[in-house]
Image (cartoon, rainbow, N blue to C red; front, side, top):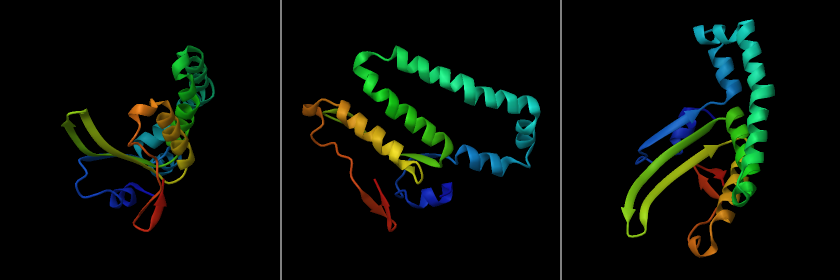
Length: 151
């Protein structure tokens, strides 16, 4: 699902949305551009490979080691969601921002066709981390938009 298809799922009152096509899609669509040719250079390929095989794993290890005890349960769902978002098309949209007596209110949506299981796991981990007395009206539910099922 490309950015235009994701955009058709958003309500007309959407304030702004950001779309990432996924690393493989970006690589294939940019192949013949100046940027694509630069990234195909041997030095850049080695640099990219080092990021993927050494730097990112080291960052993940450091995050796991340094996570405060009360946040440790969130590390794996966050890392899984980041990995899924890197490789899959993702759209994040801001739908509404407001203020009421409870404080700031933000309505947002994230759309990821493939890799959505990672985002569901992250959403469930976030909901589980909220104290029960503060999570009364927070739910994760299945919805149908444009005839397509989403969680």
